[in-house]
Length: 67
Image (cartoon, rainbow, N blue to C red):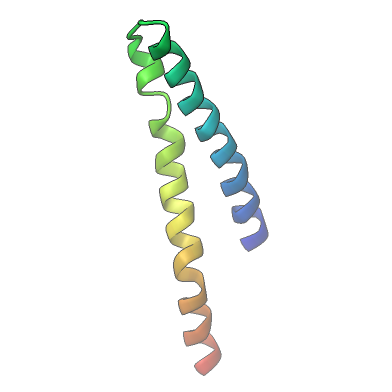
């Protein structure tokens, strides 16, 4: 399961990067399209949750190993 979450995190980071680049490109043309502006937010929240999980994972495995 951990490898799947890591792989999911990597793919979502690529999607997040592409949406941020698209946001800058659209802003460079002088347009303000709301759905493009808010497009990076869903991948960002997914990155937050998967990143926090991967950050906390070593602490949880240490406590299980001590038991």
